[in-house]
Image (cartoon, rainbow, N blue to C red; front, top):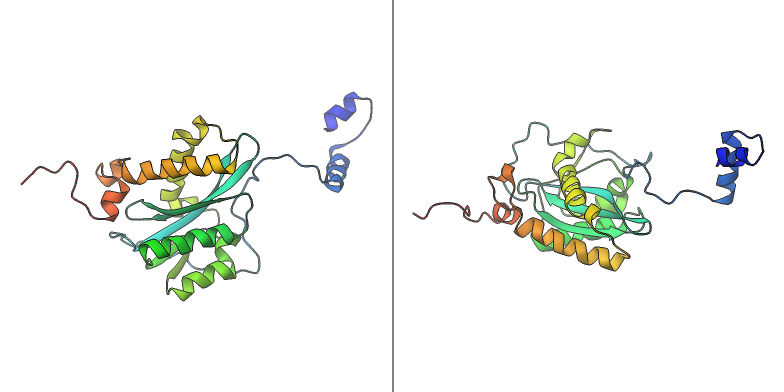
Length: 220
């Protein structure tokens, strides 16, 4: 904008342009650089997974938020994953970063699958909010949070986002939230039921979560 105004013959610097745009409420329509924004007044919990051997379903769940590009604008997606099996237990989309859609996904996962021993998230304000923490505490779930800037603490769900975006979302265009929701339903069903993982000995998340026989095991 500064360069455009200079081309019109006005001598102006960048900061006055920024100030005027803020006054007019003008901003680019794109997802903000970070979906993780800590709240200064919210309690942060220690990271409980370091050195922990995770070897069974419902031992550790993890949650994270990412943005989903659409034809016009974007939406936010939260997913809850079982760490051992990589199974996506629940997910929700929202056009805002309020905590409500995260709480709804958490309550849905608990209703369907029971409670995990530990629930791990980043330090985002949605996950440190009183309403989200209350659900965990009421169900006697231990709370674990990643260190600041340590995305590797929640690496499995970060890999989920990469797979979802590069193998599905970036290949399609969604006009509205309804189309996006229907598309995600199909993809997560495929991910849980059909997509094998090399790190799961070529099993699917459902096969590991439900402890089903290995699909390639030889008949006795």
